[in-house]
Amino acid sequence: MTIEINLNYKQLLALVKQLPQVELAKFKEEISQVEVSK
Image 1 (tube, helix red, strand yellow):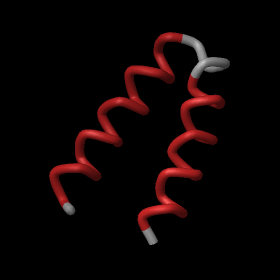
Image 2: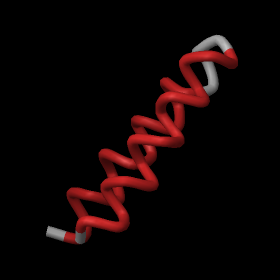
Image 3: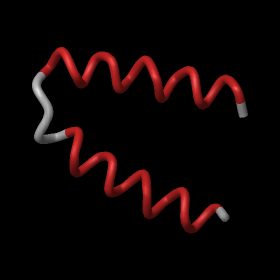
């Protein structure tokens, strides 16, 4: 499970680098919400 999450996280990071700053801000908000809800 953890390995899958790490792989997905790396893929997400690669995508985030291509996003404009506005999308990046939204993404960070979603990530922080996900981390809180664990």
